[in-house]
Length: 199
Image (cartoon, rainbow, N blue to C red; front, side, top):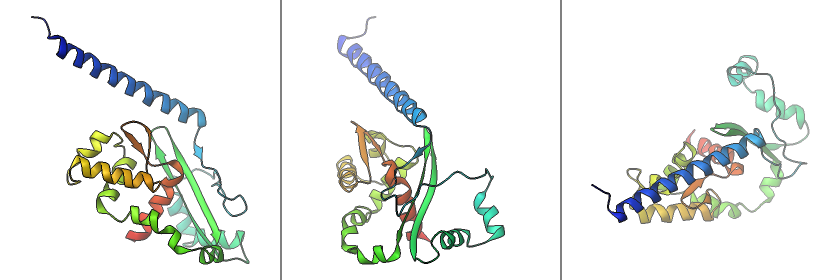
């Protein structure tokens, strides 16, 4: 018994779409491998520094804690003995590599800025569904359909609305139709904000 033409066409299109998705993912992984570990550019070389590689340790935080519970602050004071500085940083491994990021500014520069300028970016994070979407993307769910299928996030239309709000604020981008990612330069800042808000 032969397959009806419409069904055969739909099957063939689905196979081709799956193949294109696999090829695009392989290309992205190859691009990340060529880049090596992504070290993001410094916004201001005078005030921000990219994290340097240090000796390998199974748990550098625990090792440092054994020696000095304030090892980050000690290092900051050694580097900037006469200045007050605000700093955040971190690392995150991904399937195709990873991110290392640190950023610091003199405390007075932060205080002199207009805090209200942060309102749009912070407002985009002020909804539980948006935070759940960001967490899902960071932990490997990238396809719009998969995000819309997650339980408890509302209708597909509501999920699309939240994705667009996050994209407008710069927390998400869509490198190709139907797929989402947190921009590399926003990954560690986002995790730092979540950590600050939950500890």
